[in-house]
Length: 218
Image (cartoon, rainbow, N blue to C red):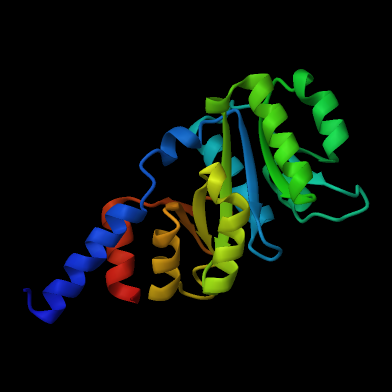
């Protein structure tokens, strides 16, 4: 019953309320954070930004950056980011991760590049070792992702209740259809980020921020 523009804004605000992840700040304090997503979604830079954010909050925070891989011959851009942030970095496979899990005393931010089944086993072992509430999954979803891609990644990770980080928003905006697909799968958005900057590069998605983005871009 509202005029068109008022109705559009009201709808966007209602959509934002449904989409926003309220527990993002608490989740970012988890002891182990797995960063998952499709190839090219910006997992490496997102993991680095998460580390930079944690260090900005507490410069004395002890953080290790890991790349969980099926083959240790794979390269990872996370190594370069680790040098930039002066943090330790290691590529590790599932078996070594499980063996070393009990010895990790520092906060772990893990870029996941291994097979999906190996990741699920690593996640289960991490939850068993340190507790479900101290382990978080963050899903990197690049701006402009198609409805089909969103459906695929949420089919893989949606039941893990990840917090979605919309990445590369300075390259390509996310359209109404994509936001609708995320809402249909009851997924939650917690972070916004672009491509270029690492330091001070993450924005937490509040209802107001997300509603404003939807209003301006949809």
